[in-house]
Amino acid sequence: MFRLCCGKYSTAVVELVAEKIRNVPAPSAPFVIQDNDNTAPLRYRLFGRPLTKTKKEGKDQEEDKENVTTKKSKKAKKSRRWRCCKNRCRVSPAPQEEETPEKSQDEVVAVKRPMEKEEKPVKDERIPQALSIKMEELNVTTQKKLRSEHIKCLGFPNPAQICYINSSLQSLLTLEDFVTAISHQEQVWSLIPEAAVLRTFKNISEHHFSGDAQEKLRLLAAFKRAVALWAPEFGDHQQKDAHEFLTAVLEQMRYWGPQLQVLTAGMGMAYSCPVEDHLMFKIQNTRTCKSCGAGSTREEDFTNLSLDLPPGGGTVEKMLENYLMETELEYRCECGATKSGQRSSFATLPRVLVLHLKRFRYTPTFQLEKIHDPVDLQRELVVSSGQAGACYSLISTINHIGTTARSGHYICDGVDPDVGPVDLTDRWFTYNDTVVTQTSGVNVCNQRQRSSYILFYRRQPED
Image 1 (tube, rainbow, N blue to C red):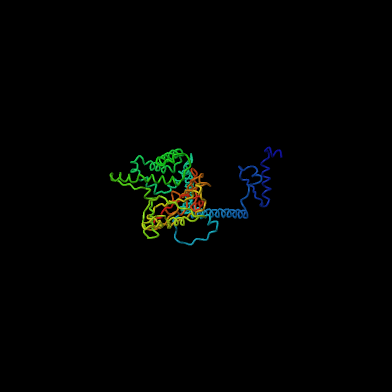
Image 2 (cartoon, helix red, strand yellow):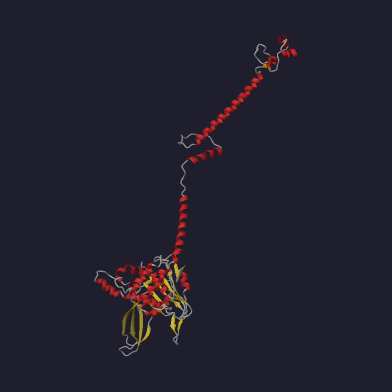
């Protein structure tokens, strides 16, 4: 062995081993001796190289190859199928009609989703509609907020018992046509410096929606001084009667009418008194002798009509009928009789009918007291005249809140200035000096039955 490892006697050993190998039958093992290859490694020369593949092994390897090839082909087919599916998912012009195989639900979803991404999005009409509704809601909310701020500015401050002035002004400012007529003729009445009532009233109307309380105080003081120039009883700081103050204001506005008409006639202009155009009417009084039947007729101008409250209360229509019904009159006729009857009727009808309810009266002991009998305030009132009849709608009230005639507080209720002749919303405001709250005509008629003092009815337009 030592010699073998050291290389001695190597040729004899090789020949011996080769002789023994020749006598051995063909091996079934996968190794053979290839002694003719001197360059092969020693292990191969001793034990032989691996034999070539046997039939069985070749068959198995071929099957493995076929399996691998089959898998590769299947994978390739699957890859081709997926590429086809991807190609089919792309948006392209519609092909000729041909039969298409049924697809599974997953394939259908896989097809639809890419189409939804690639196709032009369809306009959803519900989105603009929803956006429009949202914008309308936002606009309504904004308008309500602005309106609430707008309402707060409509009041007038009351520094020293001028609630009778504030309530009278609020009712007059409710008469939109009346206010417009005064403003449009400013160029005419401004020619007379003494027409201070018209000037100060116009200034107040222009600042009605202002939130500047100090400016409103200045304008109210100027208006009060202008009225007091012709009616000194309103010059102090005591509480006054709202009906007397309203009558004085309208008479002063009307006073300058004839002078302005003469002045404008020489200038090629014209002046129409707003009080006469909107508030004034004529009452015709007819007297008839009870004995001989002789009579006489005369007409009087009115800007408001004072009505007696019936005992226990009544409706406005009934009070108006009582005023127009015939009454007995002490009058000496030419025939010698002293009894006559007098009947009143409307000769003309105004655009705005002002009715004064006599809630204050003198007792037999000459004490002034207040009448608390309820009055059924009618929203609609039909009035007839010698010319024609007309229908009126209640648009404002001046109310006296208090238990006695010597004390109390005046407030005003009026329709919303933004409401037209036909009011479907029934929006009213209650003006309590600086505090202005929203109400309705129904609430006014229900709540002011015992406190209503002056009523303003606007004539409805004829069809």
